[in-house]
Image 1 (cartoon, rainbow, N blue to C red):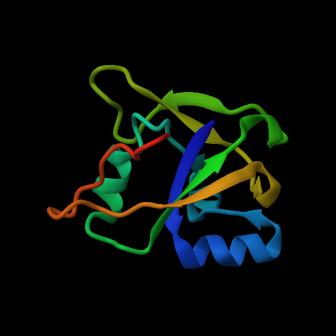
Image 2 (image 1 turned 90 degrees about the horizontal axis):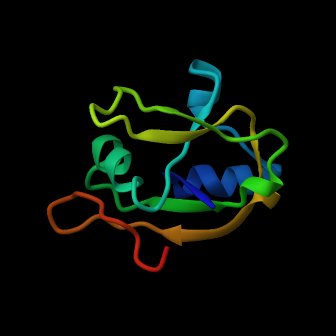
Length: 114
């Protein structure tokens, strides 16, 4: 299981269309994802303080292509790699959607229960 965070409205539109395409798919060629242990890092960097964020819980087996594990952007000095999806994500591959709220300081933390 991998995770992707996005605004709720973006997910609702994707669910209605049957497929999710993050802007990064067009600009970078892939959709950024994370493990539960990692997701707070990019969420805090890119969406600090936002209260409209959801986590998409993605079943990798329901994707058409294998997930590629690569360095983040910018690369982590410790060599941490992140899961990247090189195709639109079918809505059927999203097995759960979780509200993802930041803490009082605006930072995100590891999601409970994932």
